[in-house]
Image (cartoon, rainbow, N blue to C red; front, side, top):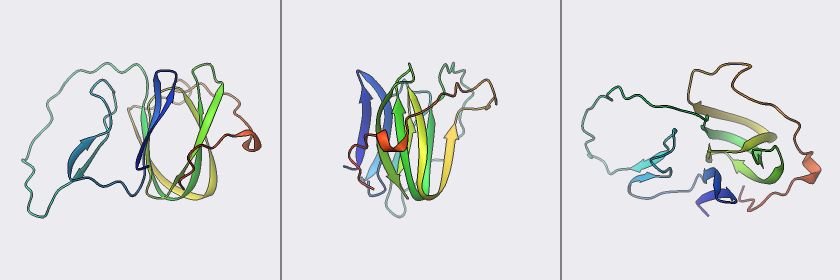
Length: 147
């Protein structure tokens, strides 16, 4: 499974793109309504992408969405609903990417990781997150562990 959408009821919690995903051209994984857009591009040698600038466009962002690029290691991602109730987990490995779209999430490093995080800014320490107690490792339900 190269692309997985993690759902709860009708809500998308996350989109996971595994390291072996490959498709020609441009592929958007996110709908236009998301405040964070995630796409993949594969173009042949010599393909020209026309130079451009981005116009200033006012956007209202109500919820932070973040993208994690796991460079190396293994990371368990625990998913929670908006009421902080644990739902399920996935394991990411080096090269995997995840867009965290909604709900709550927590992490446990299984093997030392290096990763990048991209999200809307500016980040406001103390005002940006509501932290809560998560599930213990021995109670997790890891689904589709591809890593």
